[in-house]
Length: 598
Image (cartoon, rainbow, N blue to C red; front, side, top):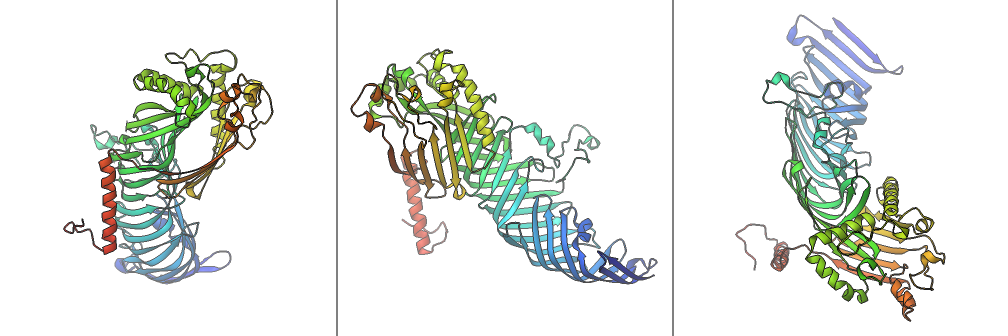
């Protein structure tokens, strides 16, 4: 059969095939020449649909087609312009314009340059081997710099999802039904990765996991219905070695439905493994650089605890069996009157929560800190703090009262949390629920913007005393500007110190702070603050001559250096190791253990 075939697209010939087809000569049925003139790359999608989708672009070139109709052999080359493809598993889309070479048994990719939607680039090199486009085997190598390496949602992948940019290398090898993918990469700016551990049963929604009853023969394998399945990883082994840097924003979803989430930036080493059965394992440890923990109570109370730098989360296999060691703090301005009686000073009180042990069921130890209080109150609070150290039950009561009702309570009881007047705890809790919902809604505006509302209740005075905290992060979280306080400057009873005839003016400006991480890991920080909110009402009430001085605007600058250690020996030993490593680098000495520097 003589063949002269044209394919037209939009009134233009894009493919021309000429030659002969001899059905009886089975080994050599085809002897054709194909000429492509801006032919759609989409024509190749049926061949590559196990790995890629949404192919685009055009191709120009000449191909010799020989062999059997069911297993053709192509020889020639194609120049692809405006090429596009989406890697199914990663959800990433790349563009390219380069030459692809076809030989008798392979498709050769010679340092083809790929670009992501932001213009970051990488190269891919290697071969796709085949036998008449059957029994395909891959041997590909990739190098990339700040390239988008992940772009998925929870619906795509319930094990981990998000957007990731990375620098590193990758190797893909093996047959298409048993691919081995090895990745070694470092996270870059723009990475936002989520690890959902909130419900192990939800793993059934991961379309590529197969659940097998090993007590029954294989024919009873339960598999996700094909009409809803999107991805089958039964033929994929994935090994990822990740260098997590503070450029990456990580969320650990303990209970997404209630907002129980650990989030922030971290550093460390992680290894992720997925085998042909769909099993997912994690190994390694990350150290929190800066972050927050959303503590929730039955969905009604939602408090953001700031995680102190140095906390760790480690895995040794099952992701759900991770081990955490975190310290988180929540600070609330409240009166010390329940503790000191007549003294009604309002001071910042910090509830500290130490979480240690299993990730999903940690042991929680509580504490209270009074770190930023006037020196005149330190002596008065000393007996109370001493009693707390010896009474864990009382400590837990005070922390619970501070978190839920935003106030301290008289030692030994919660009875001071009354249901009358301005101390109406029920009204306060209703206001707190409204505050929580407002904070959740506004947090969806911008991931760098944090807005917190503090509403005591629903009375006119309480609504007038609404407190709003605005915080915005720049430079991938290294610079944070915060404004905190009310929005009223009227001279009235709400703004008057208790027992005083002197009105206190609350500024629209509120309290401003600017914090900058001098190092990406947050160990060195600079903080600038400007405060206009009165701190000591007792001086006003007493008519002290220093009242105006104590309640005027205040400014301050501080430098902070944080180190985590379990003993002084460990701290100084770490410094010696750093000095030794610096000496090695200076002398260009390798890490041979036989080399000793004293």
